[in-house]
Figure 1 (spheres, rainbow, N blue to C red):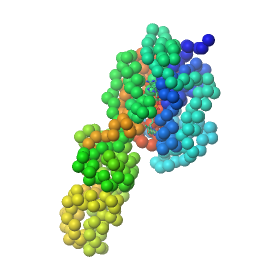
Figure 2: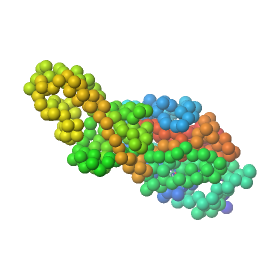
Figure 3: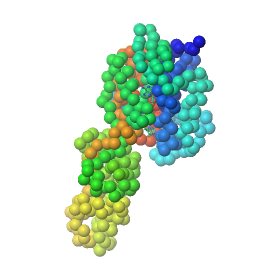
Figure 4: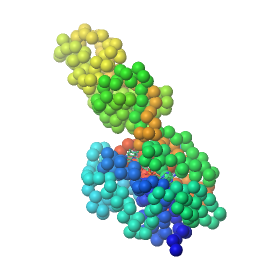
Length: 395
Ligand SMILES: Cc1cc2nc3c(=O)[nH]c(=O)nc-3n(C[C@H](O)[C@H](O)[C@H](O)COP(=O)(O)OP(=O)(O)OC[C@H]3O[C@@H](n4cnc5c(N)ncnc54)[C@H](O)[C@@H]3O)c2cc1C
């Protein structure tokens, strides 16, 4: 007869769920992973343009957002990026650093999913897909899970159902609802690492720029990022914008430094002396993306004359705008395109050492369902691996 009782049932066969399953099974625990999707690790498969940015060499607690910024420290230090890199290397998966410590597979994200599933199979963790969980109850000793495939029992349940981003990939609010059922509070959730949309007038003005990328520093009141910005048909995106979106609050402006590697005022004064007959438009075309120049001139209503004819005060004001160009988003593209969900299960009610609930014995939360969100660049997967491992060592 089929075994229906397990030491541990893990809900969600994503990054965190699979890594936790293998870790617990390695310790001799009987483990069942349940997922409603037809395929395990769907987000891993599409991540990093199909090459999965599986970690970041410089992962540190500062790269994460949470109402309690200390919570992630223990797990990140006990299972580090180097531990996961060692596993990837053991499996012979070739990888490279793309930029800023971001490690990608040379070949395909499928190799990461294959590795996680192989680890589960090798240690006897069972992964069961196409299973809807309809009810979870606790009788004081054991959990009972009613599902579309029957009823299962376990001493512990690990919630690894992720956040709300990309519902078409199977994201649901299940983990948050289950947390609330057992008395947990949820830090308000919103889309993170997400493109901005623009007000209609800005959108119409910037539409011709769609596809234009420029290196900038994008800043909110709380953080700034030096990376590329990309104009899109709907607004602005690119790594610098995605990063700053996680720190942005509705109604705020984003400040863009369009000349992050130079002092625009000094450069304008020098050009005024050396090439006094050069027009502002020609000068701007040498320093920022050409397609942005006309739109900037029109928006900012700068007089168009030779550099020699500008006063220092005028040049200073132009330079100030180039270094601190203010853009007011209308909103974000939301969960449809967001890479992550900010907020989640309140980490003050969860042990940072084991990921076990402080309110409900035998209930654990790992990965993105928790109120821990990483920057763009492999940090979110590292949080999934680290939180999963400490949990797998404890269940
Ligand atoms: C397009 C995209 C690209 C990304 N690229 C990167 C990247 O390159 N690097 C990086 O670090 N991060 C990246 N991320 C973020 C990263 O994918 C997530 O942070 C990470 O997958 C979270 O892992 P998790 O296991 O907590 O959740 P997930 O990987 O989302 O897994 C959750 C699992 O739970 C299942 N589930 C949900 N609801 C239910 C339910 N009701 N019943 C049963 N099962 C359920 C889902 O089907 C899914 O399999 C990307 C995200 C997206 C959307």
